Image (tube, rainbow, N blue to C red; front, side):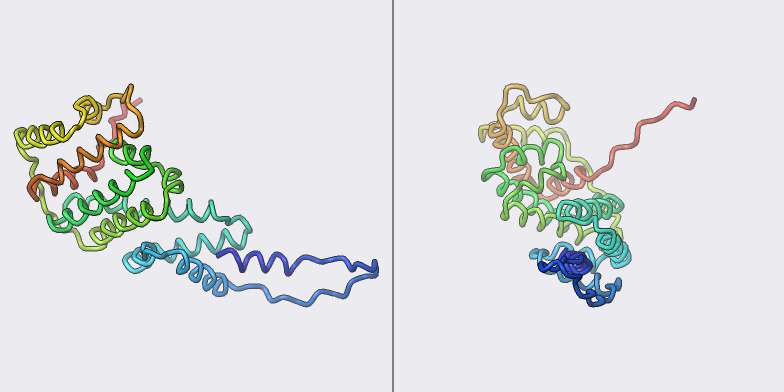
Length: 259
């Protein structure tokens, strides 16, 4: 994606003649137009978007995506776009789109939420293989953007599938479905299933009580996270749908006292 910008920079450099004589005037290189740079950007995106995630965003939110591409063009023209910046910009763009439409996930139909639940479980299983810290962080507090850059190919592909499932929901008109919270005895049953499979009740208490996880390694916390998600996935479809929808509820902003 940076090939055009690099080529332009090199073309504008004047190289001294090794004989010490004045060098010939450099050939005039026509300035690249925004259309030229955009073609290069799209070529680079297509080459790296093996899972079709960005293509799905472009198809679902064309106006937002066009503005994102323009930002990339501006960065290239300013000479400030590198791989780290491009990755950060892509993450910020996709996060902003999802955040703006979280209510559509909360009110999605059961079948859509079950697909999202399955994709979430697949990601957990992928993270369990060599990414214990990311595995438990995903359940406990969500993955930080810089953590995703550390993941291997298989977890990144699983994350892309989860993201595409979310995009598939938010690209639809709001469905307005309400998912009632299951009664306490349902959660007690899920908790028993979790404990009977080897889950640590202390980890679960910390998860729902916003407490720390003192004394537990990354591997232990990951194992507990997977056991919990597995227990939830063994519940009835309407329970799974409620659980997933509740994960995407944005908590209300704290009240600010008037001065």
